[in-house]
Length: 140
Image 1 (cartoon, one colour):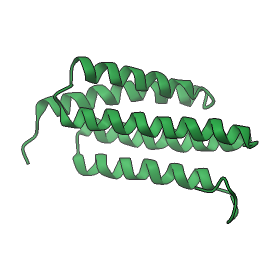
Image 2 (spheres, one colour; image 1 turned 180 degrees about the horizontal axis):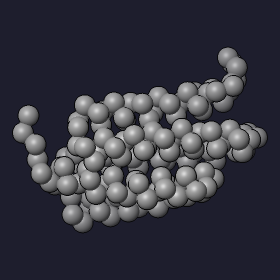
Image 3 (cartoon, helix red, strand yellow; image 1 turned 90 degrees about the vertical axis):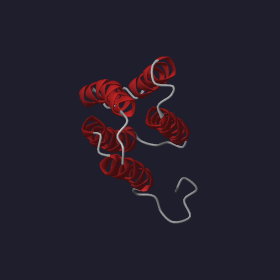
């Protein structure tokens, strides 16, 4: 497989933006808005510099849609009386998954990037369903 330097550079720059959000979440897991800030930064970066990089475009759309999904569930579950500890558990799982993704992006190992993306979504959904019974309308 031929490695595209533009894709590798884009992956590293996206990783830096995600790392900023992760560091802020480590300080305070309830600052979920930093994920939205990272989404905006990544979109601007890709649109201005890496719009011809397939990897950058994929990562931008993946992260944006994942972040939107997370945001919608946290907001929706908050109205269903989701506790702060449940929210914090979800955010912590997401933060840890993003941390693994950042490591994979920095190494630009496509197999590890794929594994990190799958693990991020899987761990997020498992945490989202944690403690929910069968038949619970909040189970995903």
